[in-house]
Length: 342
Image (cartoon, rainbow, N blue to C red):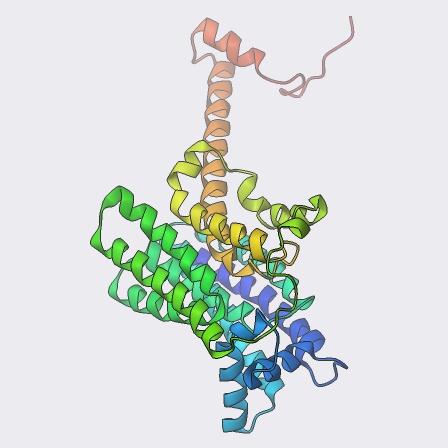
């Protein structure tokens, strides 16, 4: 428990530093052009372009809270984004702790912080709340209970208002697990998430049918640029470095969630804008933490075993042939003596 608390505190310290600069560079009244606040007001007024206009839940909540409380919109925005990022990170740390990965909490939270920095380049209202929503759904998937199911349901509704295609992709994780285990709960989650994805897509289009698009709808040509394709590879590097066939089979549902979202992004998004798939830092970081922990434990076991064999060989506790084999595996000078030239 102490390890989890220390790693969580250290990770939150990094997140707070990021939020400080996020406020100063994107939200503060001293910023000459606050594109994020302008987008909030345009989306709430129904005058922005698609697809931003179709992600209207958070801007309407933010502008409504500003009018209701009398607080400046900048203060409301930093509270929304700060609480979303911190809340999602705390929930992710809890999931890691529950799965015996307390030592991996700090690396995962540092990864989340680094990837969140992409939102500074082209901030959007839905990015940080979507991260919180994804983490809620992830908790319901990995730690099923009455409380996490309620949390996951709230996260799914929030995600439908922020990134409807992402909540539909989340249904793939539950659907693949249902295909293996045939649990009715997973089938219900699959249907609910798919329905929310469809509703979150069609309702805004119905409300604003004549909204022009900011760019072309299909972005495949743009995304085929190798330089652009490098960005998602780098963003997923902590996962890709240790991925193997066994890990793919074990984590197929969550990898399908991530893969479907990346496929949506290649089709209608711009893959060099890593803020688009930043909310998936939670499942990516969790799977990477499992792979890293398994790899380090295996390496540590192998090193310990090799050390025991070498010590027993040195003390004569092993048979002669095995002692010679162990001794030959030691590097020159390992016993403190250097090899002499003939």
